Amino acid sequence: MTNLAVDICGLRMKNPTMLASGVLDETGKSMLVVAKAGAGAIVTKSIGKEPRVGHSGPTIVELPQALLNAMGLPNPGIEAYAAEIAEAKTAEVPIIGSVFGGSEQEIAELAKNMQEAGVEAVELNLSCPHAKGYGAEIGSTPEMVETICRAVKETVTIPVFAKLTPNTSSIVSLAKAAEKGGADAVVAINTLKGMVISPEAKMPVLGNRYGGLSGPAIRPIGVRCVYEIYEAVSIPVIGVGGISTGREAVEYLMAGAKAVQIGTAIWKEGPEVFGKICREIQDFMDEFGYTKLSEMTGVAHHGRT
Image (cartoon, rainbow, N blue to C red; front, side, top):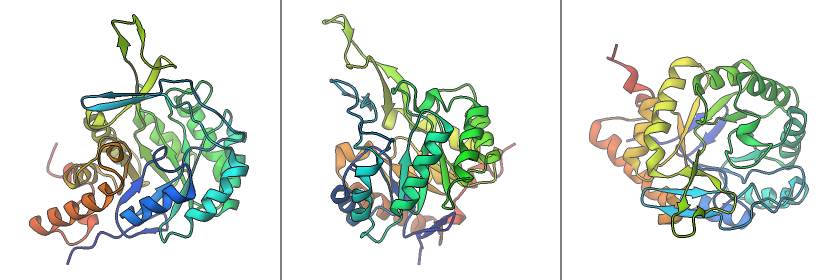
């Protein structure tokens, strides 16, 4: 009998799938829908100190194998969002609060607010590629990643996950810095910075010009990043990027991920994709004789020199 349960930093999940931040997680009701559909954990929308409208439209471009979005981190602010967390917590899955800010002090304060709202862990958005002054702009150097993680760890008692940017010369350096700063796990990857231009209009399609690329097109990059990070740090790795099938989730697990996050696939398949992915992971494990997820984690590193 295969077992899909996983424990990450004390968070007990019934399966290794998480809702990625930014998709169907703006309200408590939408998070409950995702939990009911089979997600093992929920990551909230990235929340800041004050309400934020986000970028003007267009904010999303659909491409053959990807989405390009520039939402601009719209959110109601931490004070108003506490009620949504309270509603989401009625689901029997861990709720992980995602936060962003312009300094280590602001991020640490928001992490504390999230803890007070009742989340089981906090995810630090150090990687959004299209919001000026936030995300990747403050999380692209090892020094800042270490400083931010340390400030948050000194402020909260719940697990701290650092979500890292692939828009860097060395994501491994960022992962090592997160570990050095006390992060309990790293999340890899966030979207890649990209642009689409309309030849007819002779201008960028997105209102913000630049956006974050997600979906199947970035999966090989995500897998590579997880593979490299797994060999460099001792804390758990959570894989993200282009997962829509159980086989693709297994690819991340074998690269070294202990769990995976699902985002863009919901755009095409709806929240039911979580149940489908879990069934396909189960089928794969049954076919190849795995009885628990830990037997697959990092196996792609064995037997190669």
